[in-house]
Image (tube, rainbow, N blue to C red; front, top):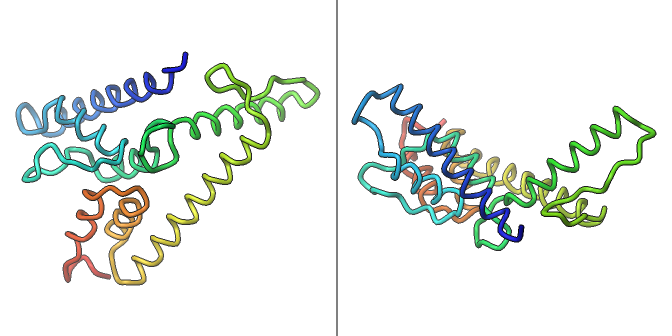
Length: 184
């Protein structure tokens, strides 16, 4: 059970790569899209914030909106990945489900939030939510700053996410869009 989060990350990477590969095959047809292994590499690189591309000439096969989501989500607790991390996302989800149950059954005595078999106290749950709101606030301030510099929304958001999570490919993507027609 100590490797549950790592197994969840591997499962999420594989599932995302399968869905992405299926979507690309349906849209682009046979042979005109990245391979399944290239998608696994790209999804893993975004989630672990290495930002390395499988082929610099081709770029990432991951659509920009999905790339943002993967980068913001991050990876596992003990990785160097930026983002919110799967542990914090799991904690927020469990606590939200517990709160919804409490509102449906107001007099019920519900168990504490448990992640990986360990019960989290209110202080830890509060710290997770505080980190989440601080992350979103930092992302918003960075987005506003890059927008004020004249970048389009997509470029400013790529720069904000890439700079907060240290993902060079998203930063380069935002800077590459820095042309006269992408400025507002």
